[in-house]
Amino acid sequence: MEIYSDDYFPDHFGVGVIRKNLGTSLGMFNPLGEQRPSALSAHALEIELESLLKPMSLETSSFLETYWTNDPGWHRFSLKGIITNMVAQLTAEMRSGKELSQKPEWRRLCVEYPIGIFIAARDLKKWPKILHHVVHWFLPSWKKLRANIEEARAIFTPIVEARMAKSREAAANGEETPVYNDMIDWLDERAKGRPFDAAMAQFIMAHATIEGSADLLTQIIFDICERPQLAQDLRAEILSVIGRDGLTKASLSNLHLMDSVAKESQRVKLLFSGTLLTPHPSFFFPSLLS
Image (cartoon, rainbow, N blue to C red; front, top):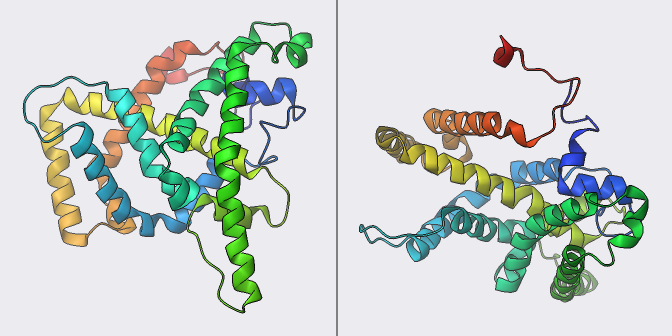
């Protein structure tokens, strides 16, 4: 069966639980209509990846020098926390534009939202479905989620309105309207005039891009740390391919060892995380049962 389209899986994930149980009545969790955030972000990345590579590479180096330092001595830090913040910072400008991405409070809200929505979904499922439309007003996790959304709107709205004003002014003066290579523009173009909640769409994009990427990257680093020779082999491949072809979309596709390492880490992680899901009656894994 197709996991992507199966109705069972949304019950296990935050946005799915809330949308399925509450529909659009709260006006908070359906900003993109029926479009999936992962599909939208993938579309945007496919268009703009080439222009993002070098800035993101420089930003990564700067971030790691700040938080990991160049000190070769042993020092402790929380890997998952640092990686989550790094992914949030690296994707902030792509998602929200330069001005929003430079606001620490905006980045904090984008990191907190994916975690908060899962906690809210978990708390909601503890109550009978018939009470969901009432009980969410009193649950602490939901109060915090709503407060975060309102704070985000207060930050987001003035900046977007200023952008729109600049575009109108340029059009009125017969000048070329500003072009912003970010998801605010991409989503507006993708909507094709259909109404959507742009502020909440930013949170949904954060949900799609930050938590999953940070979780997988953390696992990949752990796996590499267990295999010192693999780290050397990966470095050699990067030096060979990037040194020859430069940092481009095409050269990334030639990092075959890196691609294999990422896929294997993802495969093994999903295999051992499978116990977190309640088995679906129509699912079976022949390779595991044979």
